[in-house]
Image (cartoon, rainbow, N blue to C red; front, side, top):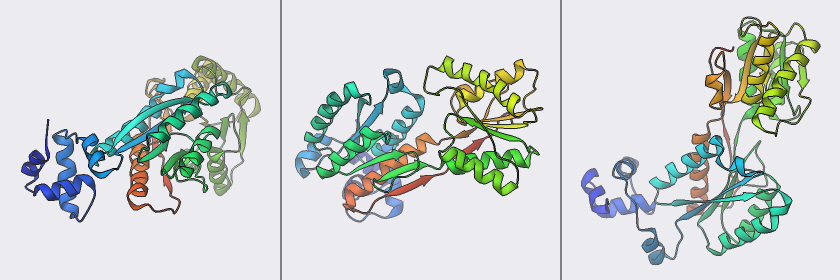
Length: 338
């Protein structure tokens, strides 16, 4: 197992400098900090956090709370990418993430609050919530009352809470602009919600271009099983063509919905992207395996995890009470569907 001495030998720095860099305490030049961070990763340095905590009376644990509405959501790949980003950053600064899963449904609320009380008694250095549902915000308030810094991943930024959020409006705006640049003029937005940031981005782009806003709401909620969402997508394709027969572009609420729409269009004799271009949202794994592969608006989840961990740690170390609001840009991933 690597030691401070090994890192000092690797970097050519003194052990005192290495120690300050790892603890993020005291002056360390930017060059030295980068050398130490790289050596920590390369040598897989694992500090004795128990000993550190005893010496300093300070916790080096960050509690990461994933609140889900059903057991199958706990291992969602997008959430795991965020967790990976969190751990990737915290490892470089000698902090350790500790994962906790809770259910948001009412029948589990008492159990979840009890678990959270146990977490607060352990006095972690800080808490990260991977969502901003009602339970997350309630638990955030409890953490704040206990004097423990907390931050959450928000859908659109929430001024009441420290948060990092993905700029969904910008993501969909960029998607529509891309379709417009490709000569598409009858672009439909379709999804369950027509009032969130996705729709705001769509509306802004079509208004700027002077084209008509064409909205087709899905007939059902998009929170069921994947095969149900896939079928909703096929049904939505029929609905789109019946309401807007001249459609030449579609922005879908999610990749799952987009994949079903693509199959629905093809069953009705439409070619993709020749007749109708389709852009999904999320950059799920299935987007690569659609036929044709799905152009999509990607959430940079690993980056999101790193940023939220870094933002929380800045609060932990500075004890700054000013609210943090960090907006993360989405990226358009070009494949063959648009």
